[in-house]
Length: 141
Image 1: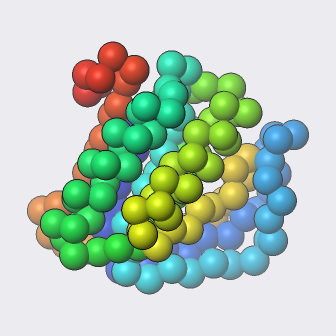
Image 2: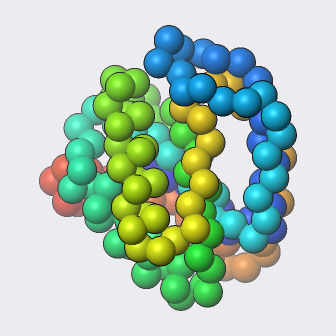
Image 3: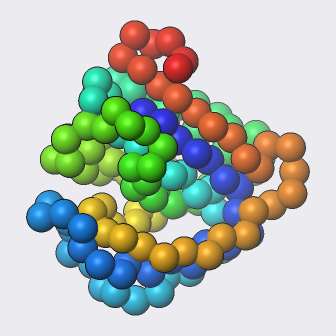
């Protein structure tokens, strides 16, 4: 799993077009979320529920550190050339969402399988932009 984590003043996104058969249902309306950690997430071939657990634990600690409790999970296949099958990716993204909510993190998720347009404003502090990688072996990639 690869995550580009951006502490944002806001993100505005709009689903534009379904790209795959498995695409979730979504309204083609603009969505705006303020004061949020945007997680651009790519699910890779060997990813599993254990990796989701590890990512959420690390994220939960990080959010406490910067005093934020709101995330947007944004499917973003462009972070990897070793992607899982779409059905597995969707399942793990939903697990990521569920586990974040179980940690009392206010959680939003952009629709899977869509081309989306977005505008984002990133905070200007040293921890505002982070890249995270997780693998089944437990080693960071």
